[in-house]
View 1 (cartoon, helix red, strand yellow):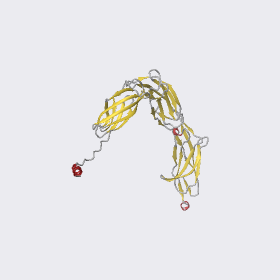
View 2 (cartoon, helix red, strand yellow; view 1 turned 30 degrees about the vertical axis):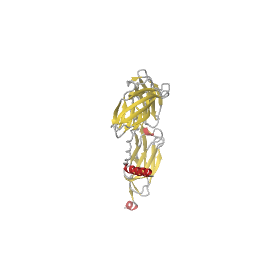
View 3 (tube, rainbow, N blue to C red; view 1 turned 135 degrees about the vertical axis):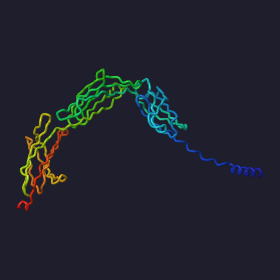
View 4 (cartoon, rainbow, N blue to C red; view 1 turned 45 degrees about the horizontal axis):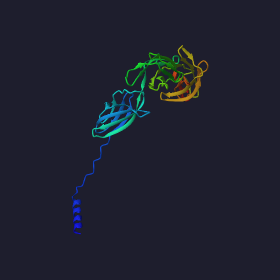
Length: 340
């Protein structure tokens, strides 16, 4: 009993004598890593409060998983060591293809992160020396000839060279064609706008038979649109009248499509009556006859003027100019004023 009692006392003393241990400090967050392709190199965005200590990358064959390259030479492209994008040296690999990438990033606190991505190790196509026979489109002149060169840049050398390749050309909205560049990379082709004028598009197309080449993306030229000059003439039957009387406005709508002004038949002309510059009321619409002529009659109740407007419609409306014409002021006399 004495021995047992002594052991209990010793155990109690030991329990009191054991120092309390502080809870372990939380570990620093590991680097946040995002891997993306830069075609000829591996690019890595890294965020880490401790700063980057080292980056290494393994390049694997996408189909077999076999390692075909490695690098630990990375340079900060932009940003900082705590939040920046790093790019590897130019890679020399045995095959132009899509490859898997495994990247390990270590920070200055010893934390590390392994991230994966894909490397587009392909021959990049591009278009160079693009020229256009016109950059302004009118109703009469809406065809554009595009000339340029196709270049191919391998990821291992970074040296561009001309290549014979299929080039797609299109007028949006309009015709689309394919042309093939010569051995020196030069090409030419003509497209025509047939509707709304948006852009002339050129692209070195993807070729399924040569998947190691990456298409160029589109090269767009946005031309200026110059609508055809359009005119409205306007004559009045009178310039002073009493309330209850009518006045007639008539004239002709003409347009110059490149060979002088000619009448526009079957075109709408909107009619407004204005009493101030900011107060105009629609009072009708007329359509021009075969000679481009129109006439409209109105019985105003207050002094004002006609404002006539033609806005074209249809697929060529962007190339057909609108026209607005205002008459002189027409005085409308009240019955009392008319008797004086």
